[in-house]
Amino acid sequence: MDKPYQAMSGVEVLPAHFPIPGVGFLPVNAFVIKAREPVLVDTGMGIDSEDFMKALESIIDPQDLKWVWLTHDDADHTGNIQKVLEAAPGARLAANSLAVLRISTACPLPMHRVYWLNSGDSISVGDRKLTAVRPPLFDNPTTIGIYDSKSETFFSADCFGALLLSPARNADDVPEGDLAQGMISWACGDNPWVHMVEPTIFRKALDRIRQMAPKMIFSAHLPPARGKDGQFLELLARVPTSAPFVAPNQTALEQILAQMRGGS
Ligand SMILES: [Fe+2]
Ligand SMILES: [Fe+2]
Figure 1 (cartoon, protein in one colour):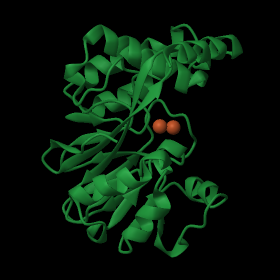
Figure 2 (cartoon, helix red, strand yellow):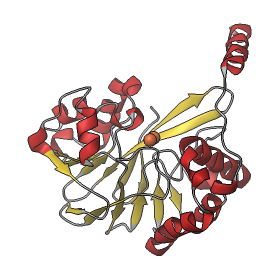
Figure 3 (tube, protein in one colour):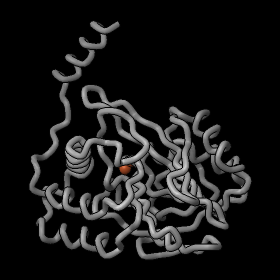
Figure 4 (tube, helix red, strand yellow):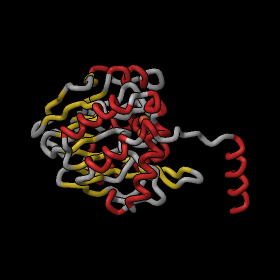
């Protein structure tokens, strides 16, 4: 875990960076929206368990949390779900129903605290409305990002993620070329289905975000980005016709292991 920080008034970032051998880092962010009914967006990685809870407590007393919003049930988003729900007995769990059922195969969830959402559904959190929005790229069928009506920002789950050469706190701090390459690589690797999609149809999904015109994009896998939605949408429009990602194979693993042995 890295040190939490405020990305804008009312939005705190709980950042981590997961090393990807031979590539760099994948940012892994959770967020706290300091709404009248405070919301934790995602619960970090299990490997960060203790640090994640400390980072959360440095931002808010978990007892004050009223909502935990899970963007989807991938392990880098659900790592501390049980600890968080225990520490935040007043919080309800907002998530897609399939995410809740899938998590329940590994650990029981308090169903009376669950709130099921589909894309298009909203919850009121006191001073704002949070609307579930399926982002144009998603690696899991349960994915629901969030449009926050007060800050006019989009919490985009895995969409707009990027593999980075070094950690950063702000998308503006990443050199433009590195950001473009890292975002396209991540998009291809995380969403292999996109190469089966007609680019004109994919553009329609991107247009929905263009119409939303979020002031900031809070991706789980990118430093916070202000005023970059147009640039990012143009980048993603290139993804269906980009070269498909090929995951490293055993030969690559042996090279990595040899490098690690050489470096130790
Ligand atoms: Fe994911
Ligand atoms: Fe993720």
